Image 1: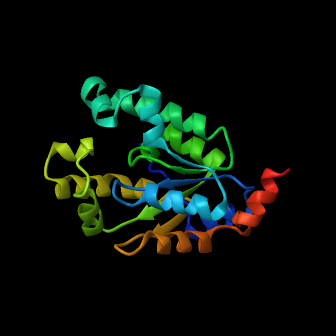
Image 2 (image 1 turned 180 degrees about the vertical axis):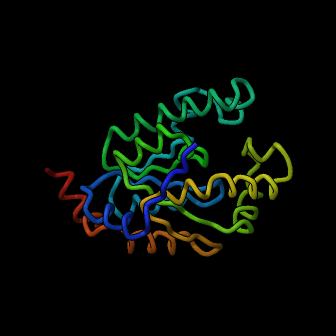
Length: 200
């Protein structure tokens, strides 16, 4: 299998600088703060916010743990792929994705085509602490949460690194992460520019 060649930081930055206004798609492991940061980012920019997991539950009429239990992970991933593709048809929005969404080749290509991907990168200790607050993570029911998260980091971080932007997130307030994202965005993503685009 041929290794995927990752874009250099300068190439990713150049692409982000030159692209038209697109949806902002947050990727990263569970516990990275994608939903909380996404809501605040959308509010700052005056954009609609969508949480892919919530939209999947709405479409399926069932919770994610129930979908995993009754239909398995493969069925969940298929639904996730279809829901994200639908959400990206409207633009621009802020979209928080589930931890495994960006691992799907088709979803990753769709995000690259229609959005600007932003990886919220967190250290293991931060993820373990945050995930301990919620017990509805199906993948964490498969063993010691710290070991599971460490394994997922090893598998997924090289793929997350293909994102257009990488923003570190720690134990501090989510507002700080929002500020760091806004500082990295191309100039067109100011609230005023978004409003003007919507008015076209």
